[in-house]
Length: 95
Image (cartoon, rainbow, N blue to C red; front, side, top):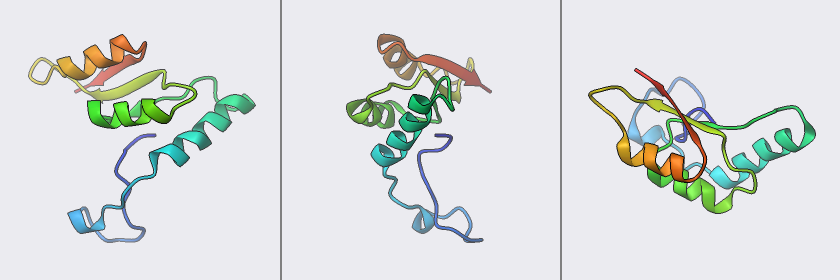
């Protein structure tokens, strides 16, 4: 899952009123079925905060292998990286 904040379809722009409440549980179940079928060797997430990752872990049968997030010397993401490490999730940083 690349971005945990889906938006309405169409050329609506990036405004708060265009955000749609995500259904992470059903989306993750679809990802798990890809993993179970062998179509994906690993599944992960990107741009998930500690809160979003915690919500996902409550419903995940297959936990994400990684969380790709912005991470650099000015934004170390210590709390998030600690959570990922404690759950066996790799943090893949970009700047």
